[in-house]
Image (cartoon, rainbow, N blue to C red):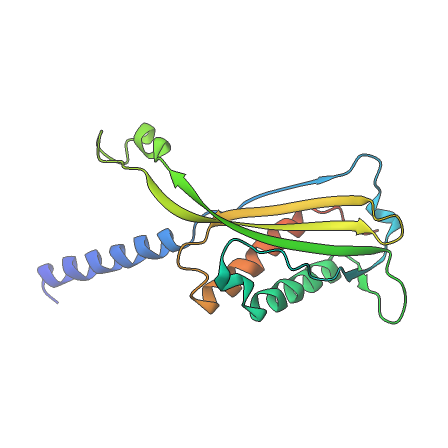
Length: 183
């Protein structure tokens, strides 16, 4: 392999790595427990009925695989944390989730301050911002116990089932990591 072809190969690999890094936008996650709630008292759950609330993107609204994937990832994460799905009996709490998509503007201020682009070269751009919200609600009182959510850039994700599945799995795992564990 000549020196020139090695540089070309290295350049291609760096380009692919940068492209992949751009596709995996950071997922920001938060969660909080309602004052006075104690999740250690709860052992079983079930899913609240899915509400017909639009997400803001018709591709998600009409995608049954999205809801199925969120449920499967949620079941997996709750099981890891010691919760069991209530089968044939009333659950202790209900899991409600909702997704929303809206356009956001990235003004690249951080890039400019970090010196990643020359002054004037950083231009604002519009992207699809996705939020996945998960609520745990007392099944009897309907009082909120805990809320967690994940936010990320979802450009290109909704149209690619593999990326969407990976993003859902990662988002739900990160949301659940903020959740108190069942004793």
